[in-house]
Length: 129
Image (cartoon, rainbow, N blue to C red; front, side):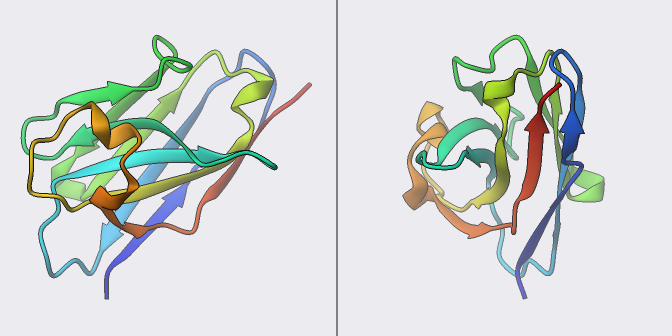
């Protein structure tokens, strides 16, 4: 059974760092990338970052550029999201999802949810003093 599991969330002070992990298990079909999304209370889910499994190309939302870094370890079937210089507005539940579209992997990975088929359960990130 397909499953994605996020971990690494928690409470951190403004300016602090966290590293989220997204590990997959049980995939019987190939997928082409991983996306990180977040949803704050009362707000819509938004794309944060995504990475292509084929060539490692990455994309970031403007709100996190220069602060967040996405990376992948294919041997461990794990994708990481390193989050630095965290701000209170980064507070949200963070989800990872598998990009299953076989088409061109581009910046649409940040917003086209139809390209994703499997979602993790989410991990809470709270940035507060």
